[in-house]
Length: 600
Image 1 (cartoon, rainbow, N blue to C red):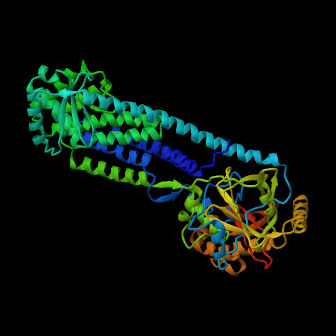
Image 2 (image 1 turned 90 degrees about the horizontal axis):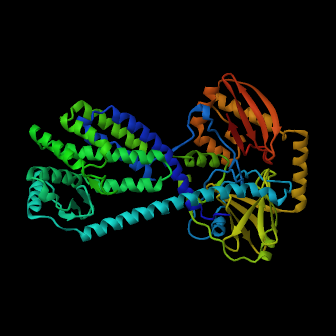
Image 3 (image 1 turned 60 degrees about the vertical axis):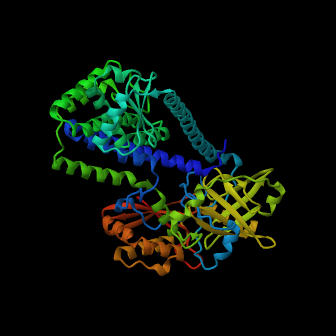
């Protein structure tokens, strides 16, 4: 199965990251709330859950890379898209401005030429591409399973919502005494909103339903069975929910559970938050009651507990769970106003949790920097985050005549170094083969543009009477490859085969790598010996690179290890405080370093 909507996969990835971050926040809130006395901090205990909800449902916020900027992470100048078109390549995309990708390529004359992604030189059997397709299919199935869970739980929510709607429509007006007491309670709590009070035989506990048009539902006949004092306490509690907009908060929590239905921690947080919500409403009322009235308020809860069956699921009842009743009664008996010190500590914790909740961890920031380091051509004068839009847009396959693909079939060479792409078809299926990887199937979205499903990448072809070049679209950047003859392709393949078989480094890479490292060690890197893209990125990452070198210490040795399947030379650089694996692309025709990749 191939799932062709990268937008859904991107959103599912955000859900997974938010769920992990939310689990950590839930653990922090659960721990911190244990330090707060329920009798004095009920309102604050409930407020601490709000950052958790923001984390679980809000995708907006400052982006922070998952990869640290510490020297040990070695975020130095990297090669362009280290995975090329591999299925393992990081998820990213490019900005899609007006017009087609092919049209936008005409404006690239002054842009930087990219060191190409590693490209395959030797033909690989088509079945070798199946690994990437299976990986993409697995991600697609996981996304579909998540969607199925959302749809199922959403249907249950809808059923529950319709149940409350029918319940409210079938309810009758409460007695005159209840309406009179409600008016007095609204004045007491300064509730200016219109709040209806109805009686229903379908509930066993007083409940608030609705947010825009709140309604208090009383069990049928409850207003006749209770004296005015106890009914007042009940209505004060329900109005506290209205005053605090708890119905809205409950539905936001339900949305979080809908999106993260697979996470048990989110369901635990929902239960604890509802318990804290009830205690916070108790505290809102208790601040306005005398000490004697507080005892009567607790007796009212006990009176209702025997008949309370838990209340409807997404309404707000006076006793949400019997297991929480004891804690609430203890909190009522010991209630006292929150001290300034406790309010300050809880407020600081709330600010910290909110900041942590809004941070959006991801790979976009370092990814953009890494790809720019290789000199990739951006689609416009903007930052990589904006360029990542292309990855999220849905791709749609269009009808295409297989024979029309033959004009694109052939060999393409990327700028400056001998890295190639092979484009071919097998009957009515189309493939792009890159260095060190099997063929990747692509699908037509226009007569000149094709997209992959195993990775968020596209290729397009420029035609000027005949096809002259191919452009790879991936991770927010464009890489252009000029068409070459099969002889040039085979010659390069032969040279690479000889190098890999003999494990012979490309001429000049060791001396150039040493010069680069020594330049960074002195704090004066020689940008003139770098390709334009690598030089530009190295200037942007200068502080990070210098931090890395300071952390590693003095360069002591440089040892060649191997030639990787992409044709890049692999070295190990030894420093006084550690070692780094260095991958360097064959030098350009001008003898410059165009691709450099450091690994811890």
